Image (cartoon, rainbow, N blue to C red; front, side):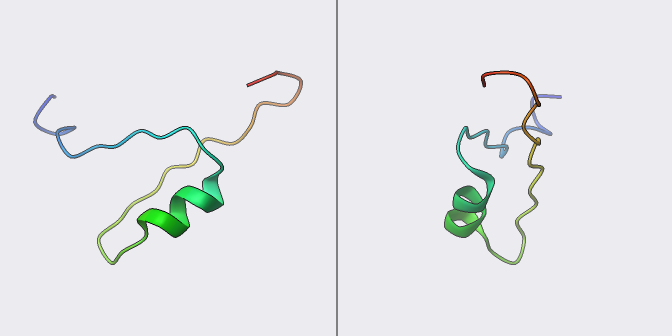
Length: 40
């Protein structure tokens, strides 16, 4: 499992800002949506 995630990067920021700063041809993004009614 650690080899599969060795190039994984987790960020906490607005999705559009992360995508703009990290976008390239081989990039894959999973943007977890905000949870309604929570303060995250």
